[in-house]
Image (cartoon, rainbow, N blue to C red):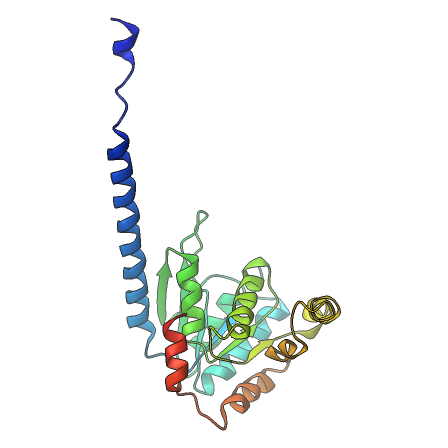
Amino acid sequence: MSAAKKIPKLMDPDLIEHRRSSHEAWHALEIMSEFVDATERLKQITPAVSIFGSARTAPDHPYYQLTEEIARQLSEAGFSVISGGGPGIMEAANKGAYYARSPSIGLNIELPHEQKGNQYQDISQTFHHFFMRKVMFVKYASAYVVMPGGFGTLDELMEALTLIQTGKSRKIPIILVHEPFWRGMLDWFRNTLVAEGMVSPDDMDLVQVIDDPAAVVEAIFKHYETRGFELSPAERQIQLYL
């Protein structure tokens, strides 16, 4: 047999492009399906508070116990509590709400090294796409409570700050818990970002630092005391285009 006959026939370039385009189209439909499914399951949970923090925090750690207490008090006050659905701070947030008055929601994510969902979820929604999951954290949150954490926690914090700063999301309380952990970052914000004109001095007002669980709940109610939790028509329009 000649060498030429051993070489497989190359696929037609037009056929390759057609298959690639078809795959991308189906992927777009999968994204739409994920959005619709999550929206239908979560639309009744408001008012809600999203809580973020490290997945590496053990149950006997003070951060875990503080998160559980904050979530419990938020739940007793009538807020659904949303977390990432995994271990560590996410578990503490779900656990605090699960044994209290209001729903505990976990927005889980499929990862290469699979994240195991915690057992304290009244509503569990799993996402294939990080960006879709992040939309849901913002879309249904009346406030963000940010506990100590790593890159994922910082990603969620910066996402919220950017959306609010640029007017792509309504203004909600963003509360950082445990001042010593956040001190260096906030000093850098003031001494570098503000000092060099990268952000406005007023942008520092987008975050609060509160360490006491009861004060966290009080700060959220204070933000809404003159307007209530219902979205205005303008805010509904903003949230529609998140």
